[in-house]
Image 1: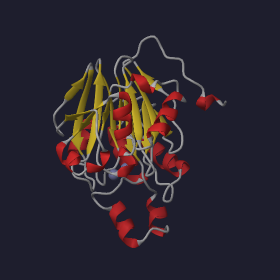
Image 2: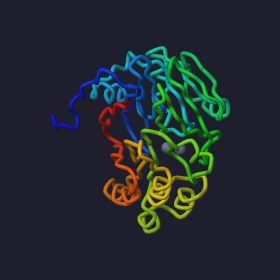
Image 3: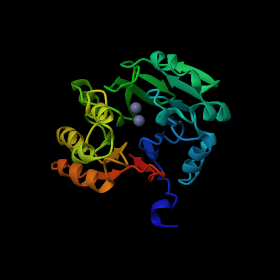
Image 4: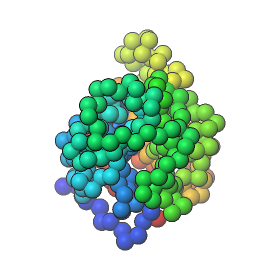
Length: 269
Ligand SMILES: [Zn+2]
Ligand SMILES: [Zn+2]
């Protein structure tokens, strides 16, 4: 067992624990907990694989309290139905997304949310905000606890002023760095798909992500996790090399989320 897969020692006191279970077009899921309440943002792998990814980091799937769905694309919802039924989890989902998700099967409980309106799951304050992506009502999220805040923004074609506003002042950011523009341009994707990815409702490039992070960085930013990397049009090395140039005014740790394994559990004070 190498150091990367070793279970992390849980500190005595923390506000939020965050673990990316999977990230990319083959499945996305992020675990967030304050030690009492534990949620998943998206569950885009099979139930059994998500259980495996959680337990590989010492996280107990039976202690989950809810799943929040960002949008209806299959890489975000594959395990939602099975986990909801198996662990009796409420699923937080907005109505336009729910309307196009007949395929989820029976859910234990549906809790509607609206983009722009904060809701609470116990002591976690969740704020969903609209993002520009080709789905019915796609959302990014900030999650706050004890004044500590993290944000997740993947699957977005452009960064609107509102998105920027929400990503400010966070201690941890999960940001999309989907593609290297050059690799996408010269890569094997058919032209319409290249157009879709580059469009206002597609995905953020490494260059976009760098620009955004350059603006957002602040002294209290501790972690930035690059997410939803394309396996065809990007490499972790390229994403890291480009986006790391943005961090000129803070000492945040930059890492890249993996498609095939859970990342380390990151604890925020
Ligand atoms: Zn999507
Ligand atoms: Zn996606």
